[in-house]
Length: 71
Image (cartoon, rainbow, N blue to C red):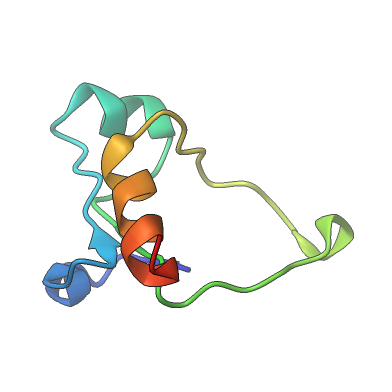
């Protein structure tokens, strides 16, 4: 899950891709957001109305997922 409520960022399972960083600007997200790897859901592709951004190659997200999954 991704939220724009940045106050939720203070946890090892969460990452704040800031728009002030190159990765944040490349993501396409409209505002600073928090990736919450401790709140994962499976969504069918046809249930997605529109894509608002794409995160790729962000090591912090990989580390947060490893923390959440205990890897």
